[in-house]
Length: 400
Image (cartoon, rainbow, N blue to C red; front, top):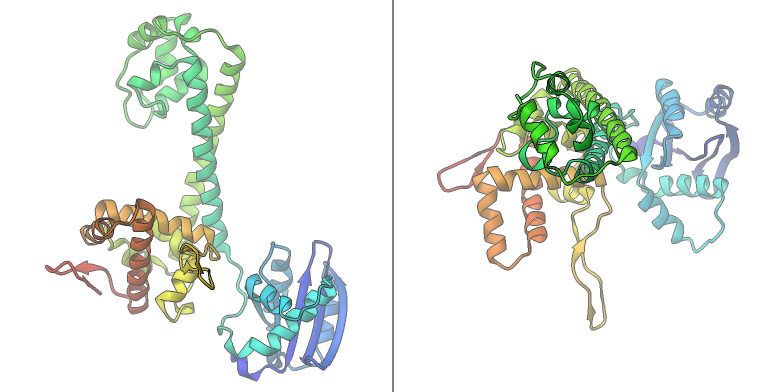
């Protein structure tokens, strides 16, 4: 896609049931402004409206928001129209510069078309592509967060129903969870037979063996301070069922993520990232899903800004505000980079030494980790750009 060859600029503003489009060759020459239904006929009518212009002269854009545009842009891309998605911060900045307060779908579409006319030469040469890989990664991330919430709920209920149990065993051992799904409290276990407890434990199932037997659990229940809470018992049983279901879903999406990486030929990039001690399979896959093509970023500074950990400073006259990260980038990527930074500080001598150096200079924990994150992103950008793995020489300097 050569951005310099376009002379028809189309801005689109989409809602659930319709989309407004504005086409122009320059801000003074509007070709058409029209509203179309979000239906197959609406897509066809819009495509027909554009058919009187050569396809290689048309550039279509909308701001990134929601998911309503995906089917429309997929439809247009399949018919060889050039479609791009704009950063909403840039669109908003351009729109507020006009000093106009009127905001409708029609004016938004016009503003996007005018902005496209002015900035199209500076836009990256990337057409719209469905973000399937990213969607899989984000769904897996959402499920992992749900699992953390459910586990927290299980612990809260167990503190009331059988507080002594979590002090001596891992309550997330599959055998213990199966026991609690049948006998969800000290009161219930106390009134069960040894044989019933043994059967509920299912010690022969896959997973780590439990380090406690039925007799010990029953003895512990008899000495428990827990009282009889029937409603909490029902809640705990349902929470355990929910946890089992979510863990199945997590495994499903993890496998799907791995399969997608193999199909998209990302195995080399994953191995490059894993060459940094402290970065594992899952974090590497999530990182690549959020970053996409590393060639989108012509410098590590742009990758850092996309992550939203670039510093911002507010100064006015004699006032100088505190420096903090912008948080304007991809929040999902920011979370992954934070986890990667924690991992490399724990397991990688090179990054741990840098972290200790920044702490010795007076940085608090979070700021020191952010400093590591900056260094890590610069390192990763160089590695993926050069397609070289990470290794450190005897002077603790990275070589790639």
